[in-house]
Length: 83
Image (cartoon, rainbow, N blue to C red; front, top):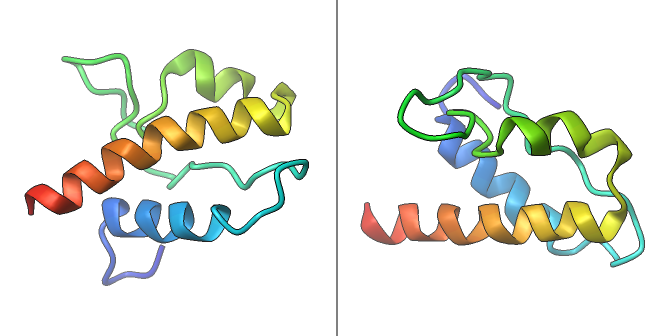
């Protein structure tokens, strides 16, 4: 994340990059180093993952990682359509 980017912008940039990764390869983590759990939702403010998804990321298969990214990607795109 560059100093002039918000976590959302950085996450969107990463989302666009991982869409070009072959299906059988592990994906880069969505972690934005903004590790604050939202009090009104079971998700991190920086990466939008649940605590379970964060804890299991390193042990997840490429398909499981891709499934998480797909869910995050939907939220990311909704965010940018609304702004």
